[in-house]
Image 1 (spheres, helix red, strand yellow):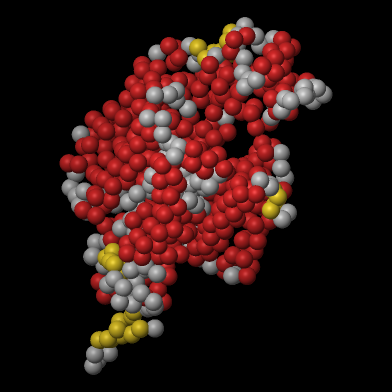
Image 2 (image 1 turned 180 degrees about the horizontal axis):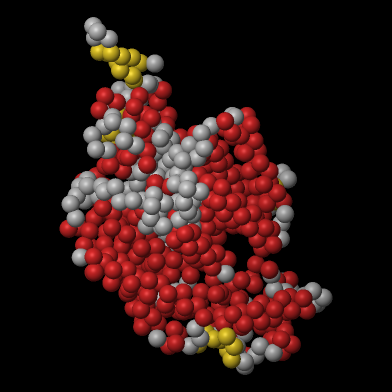
Length: 593
């Protein structure tokens, strides 16, 4: 069995190396008929600039080609600064807008690509996705023959899962945040919102450290204090690099997109984009690692059903249904996604596209609004936020499957909890303000809401929260800070669900303190950073806005101390109820404090 797993691991590593190596394969050749531009004026300007840079009809490596192509378009923009706008012609029909540059670069790199990947996409698909799936399953399937039950398998000694020293982890996080802020300033050309973000971060730090005296709390508890996970750091670097390429430098991953182009044509009837590639990878990883979850928690029926649920919703609602809708020339919508997680739901182009599609578009618009206005309060009242965060959500599904090996790295300290409350509710407020701004612009046509430029606010939210936080930090930091970084600190929908759960929900995790042996398994494996053991020791029900009801704490408890329950007998006061057992010579009774 071990030899089969080792072969599977080698196949996966080989697939990963081929996948990374594909980025340097092939080249590009720009000809006159492949010049980018939505108007003849744009094509003429780029053609003139191409003559200056010498890029036309030259076979070039992809990285060199992308660099020269960007220079060519920049020269074309510069040459247009003094261009005369003919009467009756729009300014941006002549001039190239800064917002069009990325699209021109991406489309041109794709249309001019050549090489082995372009010529043999299915071969490379099998050599990467195929080998990775085969290797992953060969490594996972033998685990079903192991005895059921959680094993103490050295998670704090493994170079992949033992985590980082606090100072090193903090340094990497701060460097990442600063880099994203600086790049955001350079990319968007706006210093206002990066400065506002820094100010808010400083205010949160003040409240946590000074006002709430968190500097006097115990240090963070999330990893071994004497070792670092070198393999985890490498894994985190690979994930972070992938998200940077996906969100902001997609022209460099053209070979990856070309590889899945035939599959995209079969499923959706159109060429692949980086988002089809991402959705496909997301789904495959969730399915394969979902099999791992099924093997690891085969002793727990709740975990089995919950894992199958997230596998189903990701495969059908998030991947297959949008592809089928595209093939039928209908709006491609993930019907389980909702505002404010789907922060672009109220963007003007999306509203217009849905309205333009008639009845089906109006249904999808109404469905999306009803989901967060009615569905969230109703379902959360009965089942807590677990109905979405642990059973339906794709972000939660990836965290629970691919991120499961890192769940013990979530910070359990009081300081982390205080940061969590400020940050996640702050993101929810930002999402609400941004949405008010875009709706104001949609209905009035004005981009000025007081002193706020709604277009800049929308761009910054998408850049910093939608890409930087949810992708680069939220997923890239799985091996460094645990698997629910985004869900715990950043997801505005999780904040909304959590508010309902804490104050008006029947869901709670009940504890039987008399049976707790203080082994700490529950706290160790809590991905949301809840010190579950402290609740169990006091016999206190766990009613936390951050709890996603994954049930792992109950699954790993050796004494059956924890139970996930729904009841409304004490719904108004249960969050503050503390039950302790008082033993005297005469009686044993429960004291409510």
